[in-house]
Image (cartoon, rainbow, N blue to C red; front, top):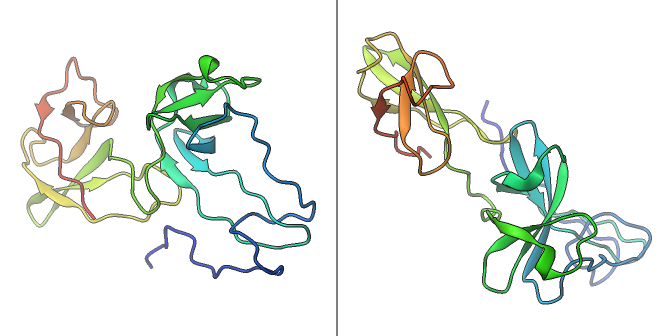
Amino acid sequence: MKRRHWFTAPFVVTAAAAPLACSSSTGRGERRDFPPGVKGSWYVMRDVSSCSASAPMSCPKNATCNPPPPQAIECPSGMGEQVTVRVIELGDGTCAMLPDGCTREACAQGPTPCPVPWGERLPTLEWAVNLVDGKCVASPGPRTRDEPPRSGVEVPCLPFENKGGSIDRAAAGADCHACALSPCDPATSPKVACPPESP
């Protein structure tokens, strides 16, 4: 059974003219505890090795609303051991991480990747290669917990010697390497063409 990736429940509002927002009975708005003039703001949460970005929302008093789904995002390199950080989009369209207590653009750490648009996936970093009817098929590994499975793509069987294995890369845009078991060591694993992204 195919899993759904994005939030599909209907928008529910119990107060007239309420904006898309999260459940709240306080009526308090979102604190703008970030530099003025930024174009966007998200709370970025890490789940093991993947991250998601949720825009801060608020509801009118006594309203119950459905929040928009989180967006996929590359984990900011400056997160360290933190599970949640703040990411802002600056006026020039780049994004930066906002450390705790930072309320000035001068202390924002960047650049860091911005969230991808809703419905888009992060680039694949790892493919499992299996033999299917005498052909080698690379199946992309999901980047987030809620990502639905994608179809595999045919790849050359060399250098897998008809045994299957793994293709991976350290980051989007980096060289791909093939090996028997992920993670591949770029120093000892042969470089191969990265499989195309599958739908």
